[in-house]
Image (cartoon, rainbow, N blue to C red):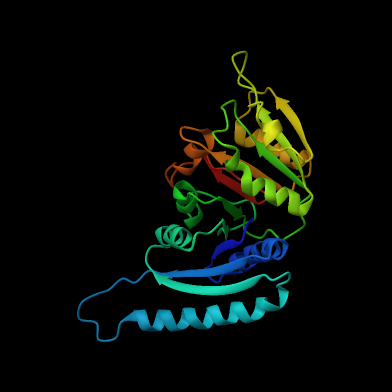
Length: 268
């Protein structure tokens, strides 16, 4: 059960929209949300008054405001707590998730539009690359809506453990959502989907969808999500996989993964 949800925020509008997802999930599971903000201080010698005190006080005001504005939306025993820390944003989020033993990280991403880059040059990228905790990334300008269809994109490799899918299963059960398993075939030598997935998703409505195409995987996934009007996309972060390669591309790369729906990343 997702009893602890870590929600990093920079107090922006995009972050506030993502907060709605965190709250709705917390209401389903009676979870505690840790609202987390990190401050990076650049100290210079000879400065009489450090910026740290000013930044901390501003962050505390913003934190109090976001807690007060959102407490009224909590249900089913869900609760809010807060923490402000100093350090690099990505590393601070990873450290907080580990120390707090979070079950899920929910975070928004910046962007000029709802389909702008999700991973490259963002704090979400850093968190996804290194987190041992599942991460739900909410694209900019995406408003919350109930999750009825989840696309689970799988390659031909075995799923190392049933536990990898725990958060996906719990989320699908809580929302009463159907899981559509999507596999892009890689030719005659493709082994298909791990047959164990059937038992891993026992009790959850799911279907299988195979596709053979010459298009790039990111294009075909997004097209599938649009055609089936899915509300969420789920991927497993594996070593040497398509999705890991996306996370590790430089910020100058032109090959970027776009998504119009929230993406749940499950670390292998």
